[in-house]
Amino acid sequence: MCVLLMLDKNEYYGYELVSNISNSISISEGTIYPLLKRLKDDGYVTTYIQESNLGPARKYYKITALGKTIKNEMMKEWAKITDWVKKLN
Image 1 (spheres, rainbow, N blue to C red):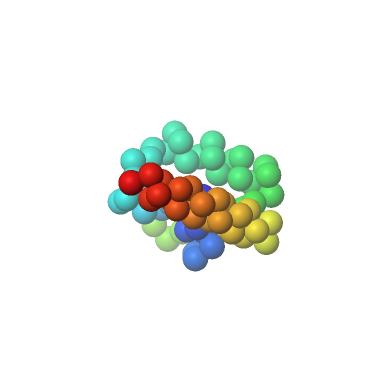
Image 2 (image 1 turned 90 degrees about the vertical axis):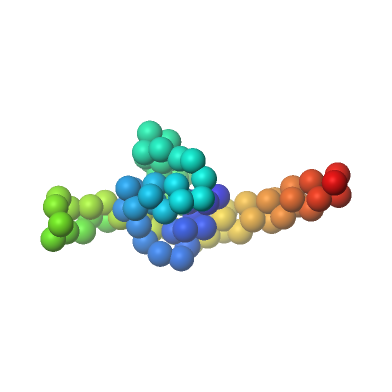
């Protein structure tokens, strides 16, 4: 959900996603790349290669319309879960 949320705001390359998400929660490159592959295989994201002046070309990830739909469904479920947890308190 976090990856789809980020990609809905901007296009990122893998390491950039890891760096940004790591500012808030613990995540490693070993976790993010298999996740990105699954998101791509499921049609939630697409990729493209962009040349970089700072080194090798980078693979960028972009959310698809299907990915946005899934992200919205996940957010609704997340809201239900957080509401339920709040009621337990």
